[in-house]
Every structure is written in structure tokens, then in C-alpha cells.
Length: 43
Image 1 (cartoon, rainbow, N blue to C red):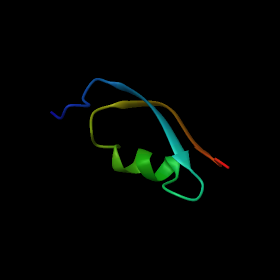
Image 2 (cartoon, rainbow, N blue to C red):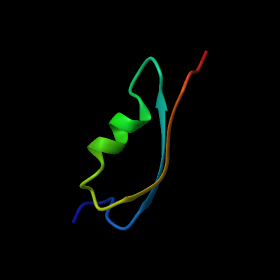
Image 3 (tube, helix red, strand yellow):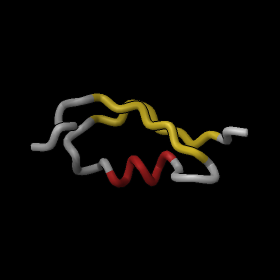
Image 4 (cartoon, rainbow, N blue to C red):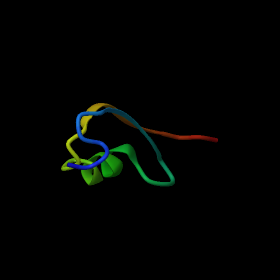
């Protein structure tokens, strides 16, 4: 088990950087629960 096992995550991605769904995909097998995942544009 990793450090994120059993944790709840809020993922905030960036449109021109790393999008939220990509971060979520990387953390899929970490044992954490993704509560919210979004990509935003920060200007």
C-alpha cells in the first residue's frame, strides 16, 4: 500500500499543463478515492 491508500483526492489540473483526467489516470491504482477531478484555465 502506498501513502495515498485510503485518502480522498481533489484533483485540479491545468488546461495548458497537465489536465485533471491525466493526473487521475496516474493515481488510479494508488488506492486513493478521487472525489473531484477538473481541468481549469488559469490566466
